[in-house]
Length: 502
Image 1 (tube, helix red, strand yellow):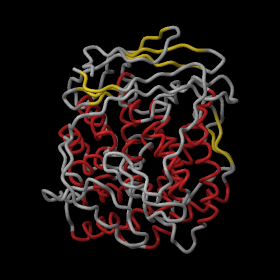
Image 2 (tube, rainbow, N blue to C red):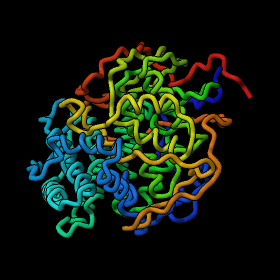
Image 3 (tube, one colour):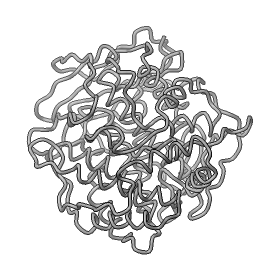
């Protein structure tokens, strides 16, 4: 039944660092299925070029002005959000704390980030400068005040999630005359990017598989976004390389360790719970979109393995039956406590649970590339029109994605024979070039059989006794049954029942 499997292993000893970086952007390094170069080196990245290019922003403005659906519905979600209003008053803190045992105040940060992003996005649609001014005031206040991101192990979630979001908000106003660009770049690189980079290398002193997929993905997104925003080709290369070859569970073949003959790819955290699985898919989509806008194709890497995982999660979240292969995850601290956790079945789902993650993924595969993505398309339609932070509950889980995909990512369907099989980096300050025409890629071609054997991260000084922490429980609707049984010792291995050898 299985088509291809990447074994995920977490060893208790050994050394794991971020692998040898892929060639820096702009050096012509191949990037997988499409064989495209990363597209930009130090100082040559396209801006705006994170989640939105100039072409994207111009499309939103034109479609809303013309009264075209579904853009108008997406824009209505934006204008109704309390964060998207001029005059939002920032509440910057010198130190942001996230995690147990600390005076948590990180909600102030994520609310301000979403206010900056939503105001900046609203400015690009309407052209009204008051929204840009509000976004700049919020961003400048934080870069003038923040000195550290701290807390328990959850400080790495804060660095990853809010780092990539901060970069995206700032990218939309980086040319504003009052924006303190250099100061913001320094804050982003030192307080967010460096922390996320350290997590990917050391994993907080824990066994490399200790932290679930979404931990890696949040920090990968931060490193990539920071690299692009700060024109740091080395950071971008590290993030891209980690996606392809990383030791942790966020690397593509560890996040989607099994691909079945029907084209579905098992998402590792489906054995955990629905909320974290949705978070992971959203973060990987974010990573792929930002890379695409700089000329690197991670969406299509390894025969579009991400699409297979997204299809699996979409079908499961809609209440459909999906195949499941049991796995065991090694966890604990290097040289300290250790154990393992086995997942034996897909967790239960609430078909009404939604997150603003699907429009971006569906539009890329079905409209940019002309591929089939039945379940992703269905769940995207169900979630539309997508809102953003503040529309999905008051707690942190409702702010993990920037959202507004119906407005931002809806695009025209490509004509037959014009599907974009390779990305082209957007030209700085000008409409992005259309990707070169090529034959449409198949959604279910022959997957490459691969085995990834990550080693353990090097020893590092952690904080307190939280090395085996798996994230805050402060997530709305994330209480689905996990099907997890704890076992003593062992490696994270997949039992490949019925695997087709050869």
